[in-house]
Image 1 (tube, one colour):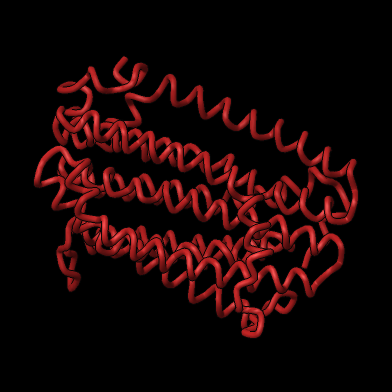
Image 2 (image 1 turned 135 degrees about the vertical axis):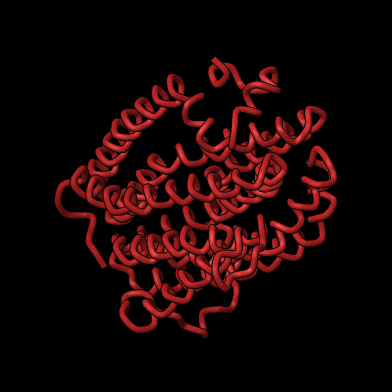
Length: 364
C-alpha cells in the first residue's frame, strides 16, 4: 500500500498518470492496429466491427460505475487506515463484478441477433457482426473482474502490476490478431472472428495473472470467501458514487447506436467510415482517462484522511493537466483528421462515396 496523504499531490498525480499513460498508449496502439488489420478485410468487416464494438461503450459504462465506486470506497478506507473495511469493499466489488458480468452475458447473447440485424446496413455486415460478438462478448465480460481488481490496487496507490499486466495483454492481442484474422502458419483463418478471439485470449491471460498477483504477492487486500456474500449497503454506496461516471458512457453508447441506425440506409461504406471515426475517438479518450484513474485514489485517500486542502489541490491539478492534454488532442483531430482516417479505411471509400454522412472537418 502506498500512502498518498503525504508528499506532493501533483507529484503523485504525475507519477501515477505516467505509469497509466504507458498502458493507455499501448492500448491506443492496439485499437489502431486492430482497426488496421480489420480494415484489410473490406468495408463490410469494418462496419461489422463498428456495429458490434458499440458493446464496448456499454461495458465501459458499467465498469466505470464499478471501478469508480470501488476506488473511492477503498481509497477512503485506506486514508482512514481502516484496512478491514478496505478489504471488505474489495471482496464485495469482486463478487459484484462477477454477478454483473454473468447477467450482462446472458442479456447480450439473447439480444445479439436482433441487435446486429437492426443496426447493420446489409445481411453481410449483420452476419459478420454476429460472428465477431461470439468471442467479443466473453472478452468484454472478463473486463469486469479485471477492472474490480485493478481499481482496488489503484485505490491503495499500486499501479505498476496493473499496467504491466495490461501492457502484456495488449501486446499479446496485437500479436494474435493478424495471425487469427488471416490464418498465418498453423493458425486458422477466422476473419473478424479472429480479431475477437485474440481479444478474449489476451484479456483472459490478464485476469489469470492479476488473480495470481493477489494470491502470491499482494497482502494488503486478500480474497476472503467469508466476505463474498453480497452486502447491499456497500453495493448501493458503490453505485451511487459510480453512476454519474458510467452515465456519460451510456449516453455515448446510445448516441452511437442511433447514428448507426440512421446511416444504415447509406450502406456498409458509410457505417465503416463512422466506425473508423468512433474507434479513433475512443483512442483519443485514453490519455485523459489515465489522468482520471490517477486522480481518484489521490483524492480518495486524502478525503478519507480529512486533508481538505490536499483534496482541492488534487482537483485543481487534474483539471489543469487534463485541459492541456485534450487541447492538443483536439487540435490534432481538427487539422489532421482526413490523413488519420485514410490510414485505416483501405482506400478513400468513406470520404469519396458518402461525404454527406461524414462529420464536418473530416472531409475537408
